[in-house]
Image (cartoon, rainbow, N blue to C red):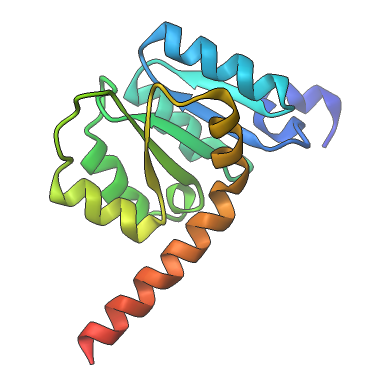
Length: 157
């Protein structure tokens, strides 16, 4: 890729991996961005669901997505359902950020996230833990998807 294209597709320019932080809380996004960029990740942010969906659909590389469960402009359940059937969304790894005191997520969110191999994270996650989870997220998601597929196949027999 030519350097002139990096401005058009900045997510493709990092050797450390690529992350999308989809969160409307500025303080949380700034803290996570500083942590991840300090570790060599290319980071983009979306403050609303429309922007997040656009970045997910147009990214040239698979992303680890830190997605706020209450992000304005998109229902999380709808996004995850779309990710199950649309390749440009399915190739990303989803980590859903939840606030302290958040009630149990809907069955749809839990089911779709399990099928995608994603997981829930508290927004108050420590920096070292965040880096470890993001680094391991793609491999962990692949293993979880495989386990989910095997369980589903076993129950249909």
